[in-house]
Each structure stands twice: as structure tokens, then as C-alpha cells.
Length: 408
Image 1: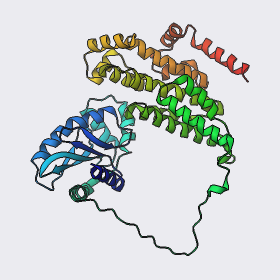
Image 2 (image 1 turned 90 degrees about the vertical axis):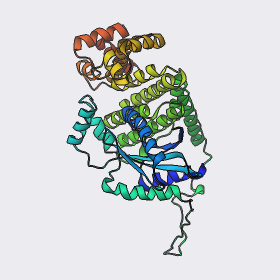
Image 3 (image 1 turned 30 degrees about the vertical axis):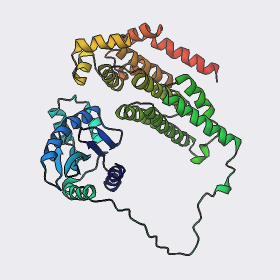
Image 4 (image 1 turned 60 degrees about the vertical axis):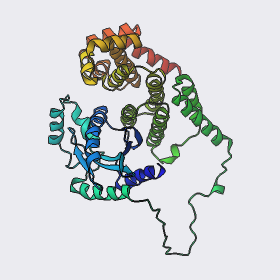
């Protein structure tokens, strides 16, 4: 088993491509992949793996299977044999065999009956994948040989061009590593990540305030905003990993991470980044609570994931039911039973939560905010905002401005 896992990592490192090993019962042994795969791509691959297995069970020794799915994603699969018997497979991919173009993506959208707004999302995803073209044949041959033959660990022989002793840029004795402030900061960081992993929002925010000790703006001389953005990007990455350890699924984590990455990059003031810090912790903790601790049913989890990623679009109960593949009546009943909210009420609350965040940033008018979070008209946005918060969007904005001035 250790050698099999080692070979999977070897393939991944050599070709910079996803690798999955499954046993004969289709249970995953190891899956090495980026966390940006859309849910529908994952589901498509699952349905295709059964077909691949049927081919490999009957294949001759030294064969590999090549398949391309409805999303134009290609995979190579090599059988794992034990005592001349099929014992599983290693699947390499996804990868592309043609360059990404609008024409290609529109064909995928049409073939899979997707909404037009998938164009940009699919383009981003496809551009993250390797383009192998005809080299997949050579790679398939190499993968067969890696899997079939015993692993021999290579030895590296370094060639020295100088007798001068190499010195690290930073030696251990260059800094006082026992400094009290440094210790405090790293202890706070450990606590912060622990609280996020457990979905404990209140303590996570307290730990974040402790963690933000020390001034690192010197790291980008003359551009403190860029330095602060870099720190916030780092926080986004750490929180994503912590939430992943807390049980949140990779594709949902990727969506949260991408959303905040865009917000961080577009920020124009330190105050915006401070608000983004709090909002990130809030959302990652909520993700852990919703998708790891509470243990919702499969149908409700899928609905929550879809709504949380698409609430700003024109969606309703029927849309959600169609996308996740459940009857709308069954979905409505299960959702209401487990969430104590209807699907529409939950969508509206997600929109208003996002609206509050955008209002606090102060860069958009309330009219623009309403449209950006998914409301078709400003009047309807105002009506729902007041029903949920007890005040109008304009009143909420004024109150936040007063609070900000009071703490200035």
C-alpha cells in the first residue's frame, strides 16, 4: 500500500496532474487533486469510473484506458494487479487535449444543459488544467511502467562548482527566536486555526485580534496596502486549510477562497481589509458548522452548497432541485425540516447577509448592492432587507457610519 501511494505521488509530481487510486470495490485509497473542481465535474467522473473499471478488468496486462467525458475532460486509467488478479486502478487526470476557447466551452455548456453564466467559471477551471494533446499516449506508457514495476528510489549526486561553503540566508542565531511577542503571535495563530477547524466563530475572532500583533507593512516598502493584502491572502489560505481539516468539502472551500481572494485584491483601503478579515472567519466557521458538525442529509447539504455559491444569481426552489437532481417537493420538505427555513427564505437571508457586508464596505450604492446580491428590483430588495433586519438598507448604512465615527 505504501509503495502504491508513493507511486501516485511520483506521477503527480512528474506530470503536475491529478491522481486517484481506487481498490476493486471502487473505494478511494488516495486522491491527489486541486480543490477547485466543480461539483458537477466530480459527479461526472464518478459515473465514468464504473465504465472504466469494466474495461480494465478485461484488459490485457500492460494496458491503459483513455476516456473523455461530456465536459471534454480526459483521463488515463491503469489497472492495479495483485497475484495476476485485478485489484483496483490508478486514474490520472483530468487533463485537456485541446486548447481552451469560447467555442469549446459553449459546446460543453450546450451539451450539459448549463446556464450561460458558467462560461467564465468553466474557463477559469479549464485554464488550471494541464494541456497534454497527443503526449497523453507517451504519459500513459510511462504510467503503466511506473505502476507495473517495483519502485527504485533514486539517489541524487550534487555537482559542486565552488569549494565555498554555502550559507543560509537566515541562520538560526541571526534572530532571537524566543522573543515573547513572536511566541504570543504563533500561539494565537494556533488557537485561531483550531477555533476555525471547530467552527467556533466567537473565539476565532478573539484569537484573530490577538494574532494581529506586530507590524509587517515593512515587507513591501512604500506600499503598505499591498503588504496588508499579502497578509490577508495568507490568512485566507490558512483559514481554508483549517476549515478543510474541519470536514468541509474541497469544492466548497475553493469557492469561498476564490470569492475572498477577489475581494482582497479589489480592496482600496485598510478598513476594507479589516472587514474582510472578520467576514472570512465568519464564513469559514459557518461552513464548518453547516457542512461538518450538524450532519445534514445529503439532499440538504447539496442544496446548501449550491445556494451558498449561487445565491447572487436568479435561482429558486425549482432551480436548486433541478441542479442537485431531487424532486422539488421532497427537497422543500427536507430543507424545511432540517433548516427550519424554506429554500426561498434561506436564499433571501444569504443575499441580505452579503448585502450587509457590501454596505459596510461602503463602495457601492444601496441600489447597486441590491442588484449585485441577486435581487431583480431595488424595491423588492428594500422590502426583504427590512423584513429580515428590521430597518431599511439606507438606515443600516447610516447606523454603520455612526458606529464607525464613534470608534474613530
